[in-house]
Length: 171
Image (cartoon, rainbow, N blue to C red; front, side, top):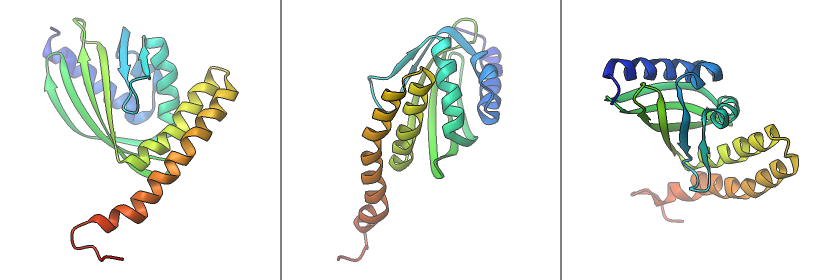
């Protein structure tokens, strides 16, 4: 288990890197064999700091104005929560971080909300990653397949969900 003060220092550097969009500083916090689990699907898992470098580069473009508001943890496990914007929509993400024996981030599990921001992220982040790999056709396919989901979720969130609140008028 890493020293608590070493992990806390890594968390502080990680937060600062995310808030400033500094990919290099964020990658410096990672174990070489870090694993990231997506909040969107079990089919998307990144392994290794090289894969995370590409991911973070795209994520820091898609997710704007990251501001952490909650942090808890000690030793080899921390949880962080921030607010940001994705495609102009409010976004909140929780990050569960686990550390290796050298106080580097070895595991990142992400949890995000609300759904319209998550689907907006799907329409931007996946295609950006594919384009970065030189896979323009896949980028187009990812965007085309995510766009209807985003449209349905956004419509439902704005037009249908408000009608389900207790005390909402029946129409």
